[in-house]
Length: 225
Image (cartoon, rainbow, N blue to C red; front, top):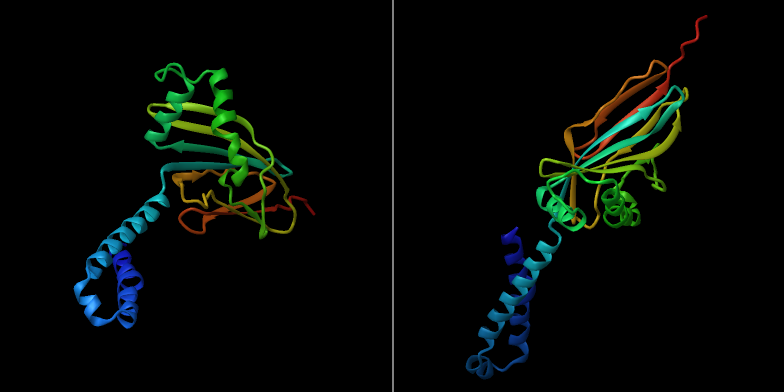
């Protein structure tokens, strides 16, 4: 990545400007001036700014998630979600919103965390990148939010209601969490999805890629002829 930056700076910023200026500056002025030193300094400044831009797009918060689809005999009822944060972010939230970092999160503290450190994510659709049969899902309701401290890790538990009736036609869901700003990196845990089978519904899951689950379900015909 550093080589790419250096090559880009050399070709786009330093060499191009230098070659262009040779055409407009008389040779005797170029030779006597400190033009090359100026260009080298500008080159360094531009390289630093380019590096800063890359760093600004680097993840600052890491989340590992687990997601469990909840089914009834009718179909999908919603998704039970668990987010586990990195130690640094966990420490910051615990310091900001709890009185005693060594104790469990109280009901009052939980409500404050939900209000000030979770609800604003509605603007980003809670990082949810969900699709049902190719159509993107907009999250409008979150229920049962609970923040938990486990060892030094902060965990968010919450439920996303999402009713999808199981029919004789296969339903296809693609499920992942993704932060378009790259501020958060969100990846599934090794056991990132747990399926509890239903006698009336055939449910299958698989990984599309390293961050996306594919969930298929169809109603089973249990009628006896």
